[in-house]
Length: 229
Picture 1 (tube, rainbow, N blue to C red):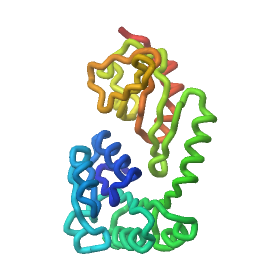
Picture 2: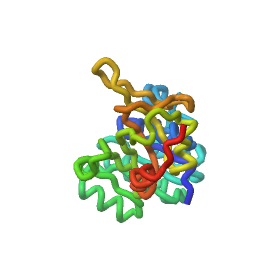
Picture 3: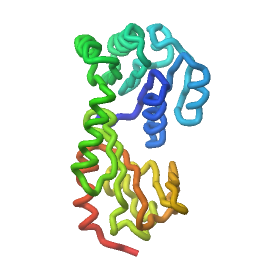
Picture 4: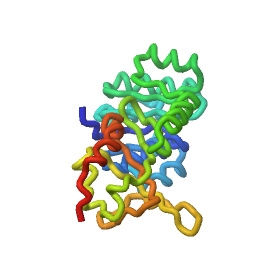
């Protein structure tokens, strides 16, 4: 299934980063929060950013939540609010609902509601660390949802000196480059939403979003790519 439309409910650090990353990768994103400042802060990184109460089912329906392919819910520490928002999304027929739980017990409640993915931040951070230590070519890994991750990978030698237009990663490798981290005067500078004419240099870190199966294939695929000019 090709995931295209997302709704992100709750725009704290977790939700805001998820919404902005999905939007940067070309997805349609509806961002929802009760805090006007949080909504305003994400206005340029979402298709639609709305001040709304996620516990109001009729409000969610009026925003078209039922038409989303995926709902991501991250609403702080209020178990009742998180659980009710998840219930509404399931009842509205969202095919895939991922929810950040506040405890293992809360996770079991969400699973009983039929939530498709329960997110435990500490456990997910442990997975990220394990992935980082297990793969020498990958600097960092952030699981987004089952089968999808964001990785930071050292620029392969085959990519050095080539423009993003020339590489065409989305077409050739089925992944989305969402940022480039460059060392500048001893500091790290991140270029979010790089341009097609940007040229990769040795020492760059590539921030890539994609399906895990495609991300795992990158190292082997680039070894067989022609250097090109």
